[in-house]
Amino acid sequence: MNLKRKICGLMMAAIMMASNCGAGVYASGQEADGAAGKEKVLSIDVEQAIELAMQNNMDLKSLDVDVRSAALSREMAERAEKKLSDGKNRLSDASESIGALEQLAGKLPEGVKLGDIAGSNAAVAGLLEEHPEFSGLDKAGLEKNVINPARDAIESGDVKLELGIADVNESIKDKLDITASRYLSMSSSTKLLTTMAQLQESVTGSGYKIAGKSVALLTRKRYYDVLKASRIEEIKRLALERAKRQYEMARASYEEGMKAKDDMLLSRVQLNLLSAAYTKSQMDRKNAEIELKRVMNIDMATSLRLIEDFSTDPLQADLNAGLAQGLEKRIEMQKLMAQYVVDKLNFELTRGPYPENTYQYKEAKVKLEKAQAELEKGQVDTSAQIRQSYESLVCAAQMLEYTGGIVEDARESLAIAQLRYEEGYSFETSGIKSSGLSDFAGTIVEVIAAQERLADVEEKTVDIIYSYNLAKDKYLNDIGTY
Image (cartoon, rainbow, N blue to C red; front, side, top):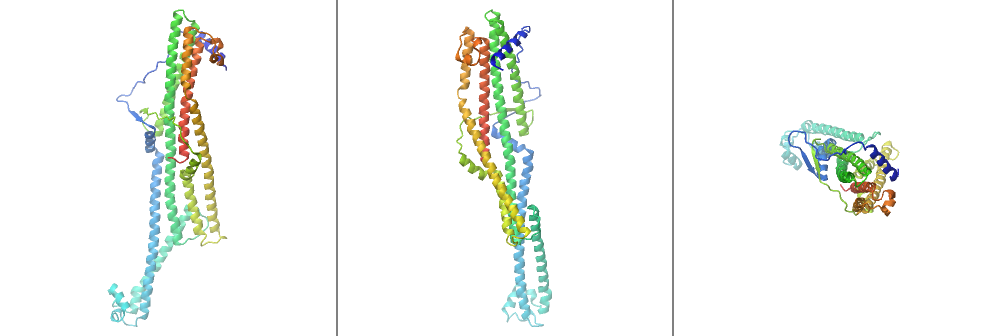
């Protein structure tokens, strides 16, 4: 619809309202506090809002438990690795000692006790110095009371050690979703399990950071939504105040016979339309505050006093540096890299005991290839995301440059239109002609059009500043600047 048709529509509406007396103006003012007691007010900046949201977010609390659980699993894996390694060393030492004792017993004459030859045999003397209780034992007694029980204990320890290693292999099989039956040595299995637990702790921590990043981004957006809605509300309030003054002037001029009744009616229509727009802006601001309170998980009855931190300072962004940083520091990339490291280690440890024609080798290789493919896909996706964020930032920055001085120009245009109307200057200007208002030069219609242009310019400027701040935050987040 062109502007002339819109003006004609306003004039018709004004004529239809001629029988109504007075203007239905919505008075602006502070909300009444119906609740008993002192109103709870929360004054915060965006970083404090993010901190509050992080503290109160139930998903993050649950993930924090997972992080501590992963740390405990890592400690248990490291302890199991040390316990198995120490056990194997002790069994090896015990087996070596019993072997030496068996050699000594083999050289001991029948019926001769160890204590009888201690003076002439340095080895026996050393043994009795450590175990004086063996002095009354002969060869048969030594085998029955020492060597055989020790051999049984070592064999039992070997069985327990093998069972422990089997448990480690089974745990690895479950965690890596391995279907082919296989068995890794103690050193390989414990090394892999410990590495998996360490990386799982890192991945779980990364998951917590990813969730925290999402909460922070959402909180920041909701915070900016409130700031934007508050600015729009203020713009609507100022537009309403201008319309009030214009209506009062038009009504006074009409009552004094200086202006036509149409001027008063059109001013009243504009006043009521802006009153409705202001009321809607109040609703939008309140709804934006509700969304922010919900993200922060605070009492909905709390009044918010937000510290505005919209920035118009240009961000010096280097795309190549951003790509390099994002591929290294992005939490998603760290998670994919951790999985690749686990599957690569699993393959290296599997291909030692299992040749290429075995299912164990083939399955480990397939898992490594999949992890590598996922890592490469993540690199492509992350690079594309960073490039898109960079382009959005550059575009938003350019748009921001174009807003310089346009609000002041629109205000000056309105002042000129009001002066032309008050003084009755009806000559045509280039601005009037370009707006399609040649027939309304110097009239109330020109003033209303100038008021609408100013409000529109103010709103678009706020929207561009808002978009620039969101684009800047998203770019910094996408390159891993947390």
